[in-house]
Image 1 (spheres, chains in turn yellow, brown):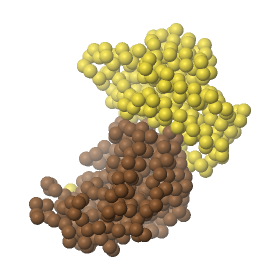
Image 2 (tube, helix red, strand yellow):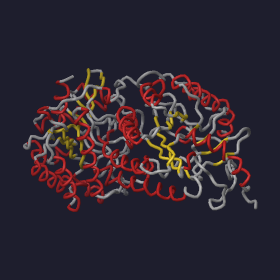
Image 3 (tube, chains in turn orange, brown):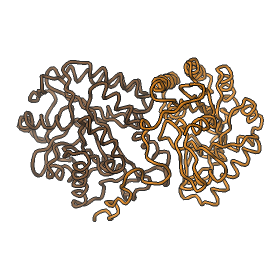
Image 4 (cartoon, chains in turn red, yellow):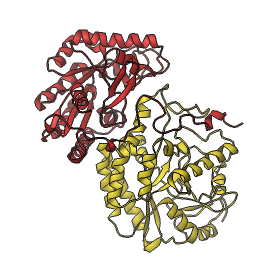
Length: 307
Length: 303
């Protein structure tokens, strides 16, 4: 018996994309971007504050890095929690020393559980990015729209109330979205999302509440992908940070401003044996002239100002 | 189901007719960028899911899309600098979705071979008429948009059927990239005509190295150099083939392209390396070495 006929039918085989969220666009065919003060590379460092519940439930999509053993998985719960108790403070020390202004995706549950940690973020002038409720309450295809709206409102409401910031950026937990996520976060005042990893610069996304932007949050160049998932060493991670910077810095000479996005997880990079390699790699970046340590909102504002 | 695919006989590495390449080259070197389009919401094949997550899997989808928007052009610059023409493993629907990429490759004299219609449409479960339809679609689409007739095939997402090779040969194609059994071209047994396999390599495939083995960009460079050194040394005795299959969304990331460029410069900096395309390797082998190989082969279980 052959495959049903729809398998050889291609209704969206046409110029451009197979959906209407964004337009097809090639990076080298766009006008070069200029950053403030002649900066060549915007350094966008995003340490992520996550809460992995001990009782994650049975949702359709599970965040990688969550509970694995039969209940109670104290092993994974407590190692993730290490990031919020210890690891983040090592990272903050590095950022202070290097003059890095971070943008911090925060699960609303972390803000509620550790108000003093949130204050450490806000008092430094770092940007707080919406990162859902927690790492077991995800957004995914098939999630009922009313329930998803409730999750978005709860996450952003909590974070705005506790941080005192407008919170205009959004990173879905595990970068998992439903078909409605962009519409729902835009309706709640989000102006950029970090879930789409198809570009090196911001680009516009269409939503039911108007245009928002995608920002190129690092997925491949993250401690999670390199160290946790691929089992590479901190030295190999640091080498990739330097190689990435060298490439982008070189391109910025002739091709316009670039964004150097670095994603860090305090429970990975904040371990004593890793922090020095991570700090050295970031130091390599900030030492160079023309590196602008910026938040997501600042990068987006500079990008939109010249569009 | 068969216990052996029945596609080739036995030809031990240490007892083969000698292969020579044009101008006395030791290694035929070819680079095969996979230029792909993954659909956000394809019809679900009964045998294989397209995406791990429920639709829309924006993470996996946008990762692939990076290759077309950004990574392709970084890869292109490195290949241009090293004088390497690509043999594009093409999801042919890219001709319609992103004709700009086709034009860029075409103006450089690159080859195109088919990698199916989309990387999210699988051959599993197709009957013969359906498989013929995607072969004919591939031939017609590439002819129309790229002005050349495809000679090669890499099954879409490496999904094959028992009859794929027969149908490819019947449609006048010369080579398959789906067999990983050798470091030289090999005759492939088909119902009619002459057909060969070209070494394509999973081991040197960027996405396998980075993604499956989880190795670093610099480790990939070490592996590429070691692979080349060995094939170059052996190529002094009988010509070998080195393939680098690429995925612009993987190798074109800024933290990877620098180390990759170093490997490509190393390889192309040697004398006696034939910078070829898949079609050129297959045609040369068919014209000069195919018959001798067939004569030298022994059947499985034979003497």
